[in-house]
Image 1 (cartoon, rainbow, N blue to C red):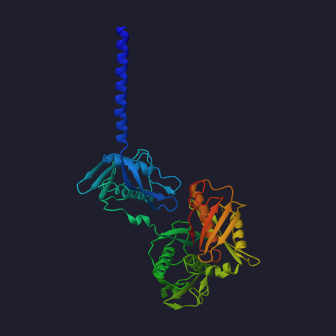
Image 2 (cartoon, rainbow, N blue to C red; image 1 turned 180 degrees about the vertical axis):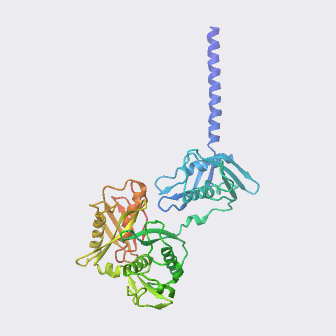
Image 3 (cartoon, rainbow, N blue to C red; image 1 turned 90 degrees about the horizontal axis):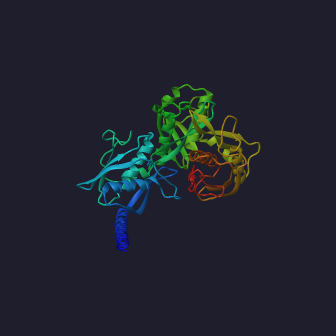
Length: 442
């Protein structure tokens, strides 16, 4: 009986110890959960790759290195359903973090050994995701980031580091895109999309676009038919006319009829893509000239595709052509035997033509794509379009290229300045993750 009683007493003692241990462990886990801390997490817009601020209240530990690790973990997984992405890779960790006098947070990070190399844009986005987010931590006034095993002053490969005293607001402004028209190997006009600074006047934007066109394409298989920038005096925009003024030395250049036609078309196609520009005037030394090289009449302003789009006697449709390993939009102009009457007819024919690209080209707009609804807002020029199509592109990059085809083709139509598109009932995300819940401007 004594032995049995000792056994019962021992069991009771074990039970009490287990309960005490559970309370202690539970308390430690609650403490490890951290304090509620208001922070601003910076993710990337999934479509534009701009930084997006996302204020939250996060449970963060009190130790600095654990706070930094917590921020990295939160940044690695963007909130679902908000069109957000991240540049923070798996295996990216915080090795050390110390808050120095003056509110300087010194952070040493680590990367996985098998981390694939990043390009400059992705590395820059990662750097500012981290900096902008960590600057929102309590008592942090500035931040210094470094990575174990990387040279001093270098983040991963390209981005140079320094003590950052504030969030990089400039990262929220990625500039404004423009469409530049270069000549492909078959003589057609291929579009390279470039980004120019924001905050430019209309004349400054037209000048920068013209200079970029004259400086040439990034794809070596394309060519710019224009001479170099040394013959450009300036570009001004007044009303709806862009005036391109050349030095008198341009008249000494020799060009054939085809080359001069390409000069005209590259300039006019590029500049009339800019907001509010519908015609281009060519000048030499500030004066009108009958012709630059003796073949193309330049006395009167030049219109996009000679005004045939407005007349309804032509459709401008974009398919995809392979250029140096990339798929780029290429323009094909389809002459119409009878002038097209009505916007709905033009839209339906453009969609059908995209599904039937020229031989050798590709299209991500499949044949049989149907227009289920369309509304053109007369006061803004926005075309609201709903489409039914199958199959859809297989990934986000292909989805973006499909939307680019639609944007370029449908904003060629008279009075259409931007496109808001829905696909198979979705007005936010395509299946691969590309965000379409915003207007796509001309």
